[in-house]
Length: 139
Image (cartoon, rainbow, N blue to C red; front, side, top):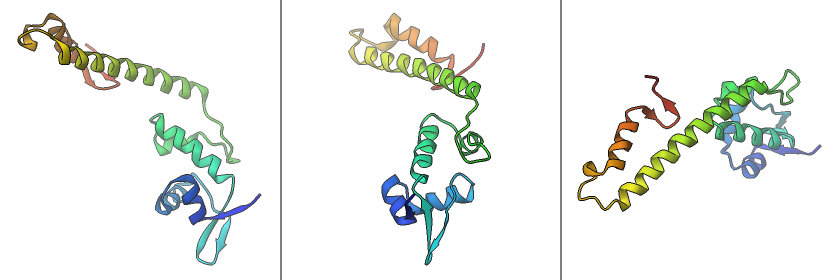
């Protein structure tokens, strides 16, 4: 496998070198050595960085992501954790869809005041059950 210096990895991954050094410090990636003062990585680091990016996009913390790699460095995610995160994302999508639909209704509502609109009043009532997208308050 080819080796890439940190500049090439940064360019290919779109991540700044500081992030790559931080990921290495956290044990998420590992350099194979140095070429002068520059860290050198196996080209497989790009796939690992892509997996980290997918995990971050899904809302996993770096600690969560670190636990998804086995002792040999290969991906070994707990499928129950993945399912739970997918369920959490479904709830967030539902919440955001309701917010989007409410905004669209408010923008087009013909009522003289939004507070006179039964649909908008329903949105206000529903908003009392939401803390933030994806975070439902149990009542």
